Amino acid sequence: MRIWKAIMAALMVFIIAGCTLFLITEMKDSSTDQRAVVEEQKKIKSGNEAADQSSAPLTVQKNRIKGRAQPAVSEKRLDAPYVSQKPELPNGCEVTSLTMLLQFAHVKVDKMTLASQIKKVPFQSGKFKGNPNDGFVGNMYHGRRSNPGLAVYHGPVAELAANYLGARVNDLTGKPWSAVEKQLIAGKPVWTITSINFRPVPDSAWVDWRTREGTMRITFKEHSVLVTGFDKEHVYFNDPLAGRPGSKANKQLFIKAWHQFGNQAISYTDAEE
Image 1 (cartoon, rainbow, N blue to C red):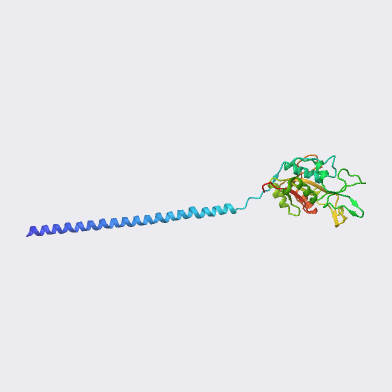
Image 2: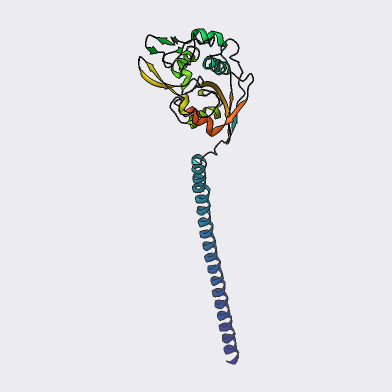
């Protein structure tokens, strides 16, 4: 009897130990599974976040690049052909500057050809003076007091340029100075009208000029140059009276003089534009 009780007691101990071991093992497996689930959830969450970060910021970055303002260009210089108006065209600065512009555009033309082709009007006809908006006023070839010459403005010059460049001619007249600089940055020089000394013309040098179209204010201190560059302080240009390329003037004074003549400017565009 005692032996039987001992056997039953040992059996009970064994059963209890086995159950305890089984429960411990199940708890460990359950804990491991839970950790695995948590880790898997973390991986999924991390993957989603990574996907969000790889797509959304990229879109933002693309938008930033696309919408980012380009840095302002503070200076530009072009190397344009130089043509002197001397000695044949003492009054022909406008057609000479146009010659340089057309030659830069790879048009084979000379100043004397353009001088013969530009529209012309008499210096005076009866009681009316010639209008530079209609053609060159007077004599371009010499400056005699008995047969003087004045100037020609942008309209006839742009019309003549169109004979060579067609619709590529870009008449910027009336636009702000920034339009001139935009053309220079694009690699195109600009024909302009300014004053003979590249600074504002005093009121005393302007006179009333009665034409058939009405009275206008003119000055004999008008001049035309081909603008080839700029920086913060200067405007660079080919002056047909200077005898050499690369003249420069104070930027603010040059622009003020340019304003006095109505912001007259002509350039051109590329064929594919």
